[in-house]
Length: 407
Image (cartoon, rainbow, N blue to C red; front, side):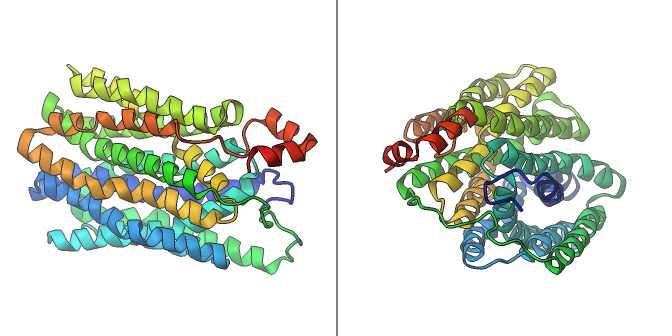
């Protein structure tokens, strides 16, 4: 999807971005479902956050494995099939009345998400070339999908209740059909020799990738902790309606989409690590303000800061991971994206238990040390092998010096 020089393929990236919108809509649907499950079925906070665990437990194990697979052989069908399974799982979530039916259906959706991301992220990396901003468009598609989750789920469930979830599968059915049709058309055309994924002459930097993986875990815990609890927190603390609680979640996710694009733009100009570091620096006052918010409008302002802070590093961390492992792009994508959508979900039930025992304020306050820890870890990260456009020009002019700097 890109030429041998890594030039941006706008059409290919646009299709992948659109599919990412639909796929991650189903991740955004999960936290949006929780207030309705609590109010309609009487779930405890621990049970509700257990649904978040269901969406992520399979992804935590399977998604890195899918990444290894796509490094070994092309699996283009994983993108539409994973997307379809993600939508069908959410569609089935409200059909059965038992807790375990809902848990299993949401887990099936998580398996679809795990299948989709590594193959799609590898293709997006090829389409984006060397640009972090190009890759951020793909990530923004996911963020837009996450933000659309509450926007799509809330009116459907307000109208039909939890039993209306089958309607939520329709976008996945349509987009999967589009991807399959485009895939057949692409396979029928002759492929140019060389492609954009030639062998790398650089070694994989597993040590730096390990530090980055730890950072991704922390961001994931922060994201899932906030996204799973912020709507319930606003409803409980300020006595507002479920729609107002969903508005706080939507604000967090929608602003996050802008933060993701800004992160790619800043990474191309300042470098990967400074852009990541800025995000966590912004998240600190945002989380403090949310915990101490005296009113619903102040909580919304805190959601804006958190959205910017937690999403600035999102696409940049994935791009940086691909640069640390240049010979294993699928593995890097599977691990970074897999941890991003799974590690936090696995920890979220602990915050639900804390909320049941001591209240939602204490549960959110328990997240406060994490952005500070993330800032410390960024001090261990070397810069990516591709940074600003000016530096890329310098490297092309003097390859021996560049090679010696990174050995």
